[in-house]
Amino acid sequence: MYPAYQILGLQKLLRGLQGRSLPVIAGGGFFRVLDPRELAFPKEIRALEIARGLLPFRPRIRWFALGSVADIVRLRDKDLRLLQQSGCHRIEMGSESGSDPQLGRLGKRHRAGDILEATARLRAHGIHSTHNLIFGSLGEEPSDRRATFRLARKIGRIDPKAHLQFRLYQVVPGTSHGDQALRSMPWFPKSLDQLATFRLGLAQGQRSLPWLSEEEEDLLHKLTDYVLPLAFHHPHPSKHPLVQTFFRRLARARVRTGLQLGLRWEERIYRKAIGEPLLTTYLP
Image (cartoon, rainbow, N blue to C red; front, top):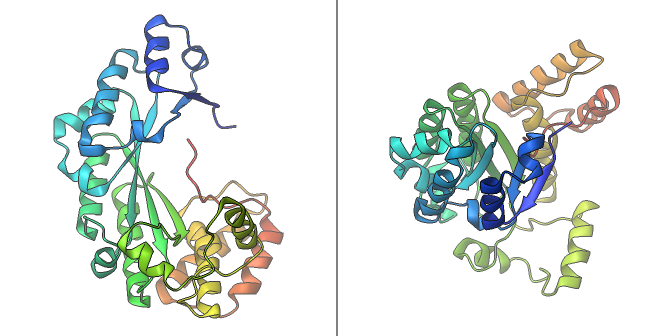
């Protein structure tokens, strides 16, 4: 069982801490701030303010934050020590790709080397990292994906407890890359009702990346839903550990070699034989 989250606004949280009245303290659970912007890193200020406010209550509180790679690499060592001492145990980053050309196309401010630097500096200060890695965005080539696989392996060597979240690209309107992608998607939802229908269609297998071939999009689904989580995460304990180990080694071989033969049947057999869900989204 994962500890329950307490959904609280920041000021209510701090007032409750000062009064020693919040159940999150008595229960030793995790809390989550209602507005995620209060835990993000705009110019590094907000997260450090939170850290200073929570510092007197460590170790009764553990929290995690969101941060851009570009902001994290600018943090000073004393800032990272403050975050760790306040109970910040993990920071989630929009790393997105291990390919510098693809990061440029996505309009990101960082490069692959910055991701590794941020991971290493956080780890040196006792903070683990979560990385969102995106596949299937406009302009992505197989070489870009291979660069992301290499980045994932390097992150794991730096911090074995880093969590990698593998995702298919989702359009973000209002960004240069997103607006460019939308020109290939005239059917993209324009209302909340259309959005609900669209999301239901995605859950049922509807295509969402029209710039890719149907075969390539299907392959990326299998990579992000099955191969990559199995290759890079420690799966849940299984009643069949030898079978699980075999499939995990096979997934790693697929990442190294690009082997696709038999993937559809392999995934079906794994899910039927093992039955345990694969780790995809980080939960504390």
